[in-house]
Image 1 (cartoon, rainbow, N blue to C red):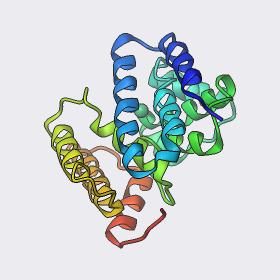
Image 2: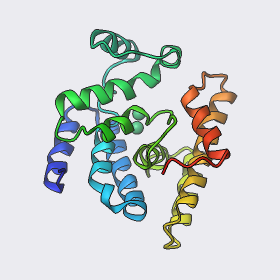
Image 3: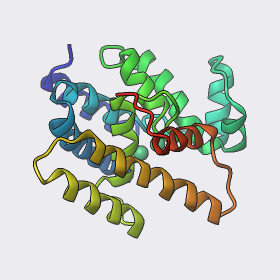
Image 4: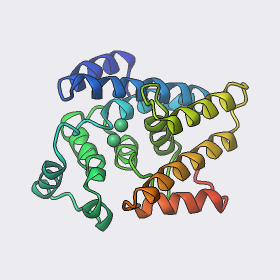
Length: 206
Ligand SMILES: [Fe+2]
Ligand SMILES: [Fe+2]
């Protein structure tokens, strides 16, 4: 079982793997996912915090190094990951977490890390919270991130723990992410498209 003392130690440990800017983002994601978990699934708070602290733990590697690392470790990469190597850190991050932080790297935590860049179906509440927290953490200053953060916090501030409100903002984040990629004519991972379709079709995984 993960304790707050263990999370204090994990915070110190992950700091040595990243630059200050990335560390601040990591702390922002932890803060945001704790906010979400406290309202939606208090039992998941510590696992959610661990997933947040570890989600970008291999981002010290360049994109090329990510692909090389994956090949060396026998991590299978999908067509999407080969087409958009920026996605690969999610998979290497899950592997790295299992290897070096096994006390935190439950299957659920590793799955959330692995899906945090694109989401994919089926997704758990933990997967969805990490995906969204990565988007809406307070250090994100893009106008679309700020708008989503305001929307999310306004919806959850009402005191209702209505999962549908969370799903609405999750869908808005996927729309924002996919639209941004479309405008830039960049590759859209099928996991994101599948997650988008699942949400608009009203499918529920949690
Ligand atoms: Fe990431
Ligand atoms: Fe991130």
